[in-house]
Image (cartoon, rainbow, N blue to C red; front, side, top):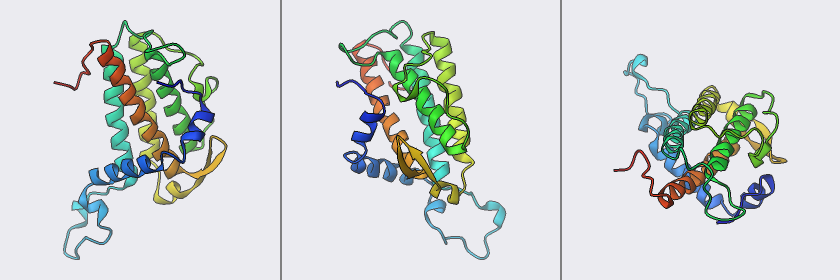
Length: 204
């Protein structure tokens, strides 16, 4: 498993991962209620109160909730193994968790236009959390802030421009790219758990 080299690594992976991003987007859209995918499906006689507003922002926010549950669960069951890594020069268990927290804070700041978190950057090596209880709370709170930021975006907000890793992109594209990256890190963290004979809490 190759080491993660921060912004340069992410920029190099941007184009090759476009197909994976398309698959991720398709999965998110599939998870959306049919009412959200049919833009003019409402009938004239249907009461307005029964409408269930849903859009890409809602689907992404729901996905963030799923990621939060799984990463927090892994942070709990991997307590005592935070220093484990599969090889020299590769991120440890806690390195991955800390990186996720940094990504969440950075993306939430970009989506809301607030100040970016100080220190650490995308390398995730700033103020490292090593206590299992604190790690679970850091993951949970960072995901809660990201979910709130996504849910508050309007359709026009999603199309607004922002700069990510030195590139101009839309908030929608940036959110999709970083959430896709987190799904890859989720797979990495699951592999770490299995390598230590730890069963993910949602597995049977």
